[in-house]
Length: 368
Image (tube, rainbow, N blue to C red; front, top):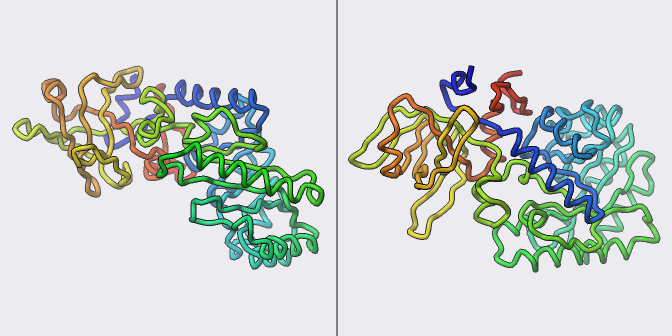
């Protein structure tokens, strides 16, 4: 039976072959550069896909929340890093996790370090997150007083141990000069490591973002790379030049519920609760919530003619269809949508269907 026969409502498909190719390519590149790959698992959020990653020598992983870290615990990871400014209200959960799993957290102020130093009952490592221009979170490398206050708390703790410095240059998604952004991040990490080397000789530096890690070949003295979206890629990454459409490993399958040939529109069951609402803007100002691919028993193909989701509401989506698509589609057929932002689409959908008809887990799973 074809996997297509299992689909009656919006379903997120995953191509294992493409996913593995993306994992292998990034792992091989990182290894060749003498770096460690610690992928951010906020994109895949899956134990099974995590096992695929281990096939390429990946032994550590990053989580976006303590909930995701708990989900991944006990799956054979050497260490799980929670890459979010730690929420001190979750210290009891952290203690339970740290009792059975190598774990590290992100610290951005002395108040958090103090609460951890006083509240931990098992060893937890921590990265100090630096702000190298993104402006979302992190400590300025020049804020020596705050850094010293953090280290003072760790020095007096039996369980809180400094691991290194972390930067997520998320502005590579928006800035035009990604090379400049990455060089600034690398330089900031290098300066901090050199400054504290005698005090923390085992400290590591970690840099993580897919646009930079996918295309750059020189990361200077950075020890570890932590991109996440590269596992699946998406249309946003295509626009940024990180990949091609052929590298996108997930696709939302949606049923056609109406066709309006006079308006060149196709109505689908698939909206914001399935795709999320990330959008690309075409040069003419029109919105693109995802591009149409054609499904078959082996997966999907990218047509030579262009059709895209031009608007979405909660459950509905409207496709601006090409003449070729209109001529070949009927009510009840299935179409595929390459997502603008695969992380959010996967989070919305909460599970995957493989091309051999197997359900693949997700941390937000609806099939537990």
